[in-house]
Length: 70
Image (cartoon, rainbow, N blue to C red):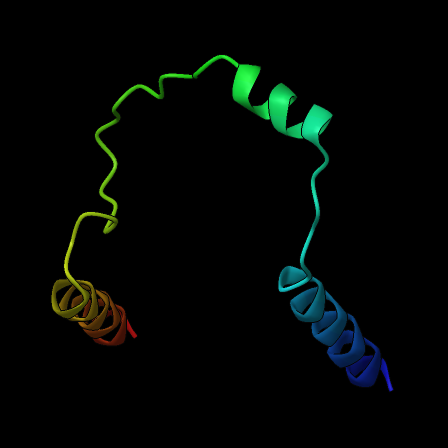
């Protein structure tokens, strides 16, 4: 019974991710006026700049390493 509640909550969360939002002119102006935040570069690997093929290969490598530890 608890699993069903989690399923419903997940479905609700997923559904709201794709809701469309409308902004009025005042909200748009506030967003545009918001100062930029420069995010410092860190030495943590991320795959944002990798191609899809490279991301898949990297994920496969991670899974392979986890499998070897078991």
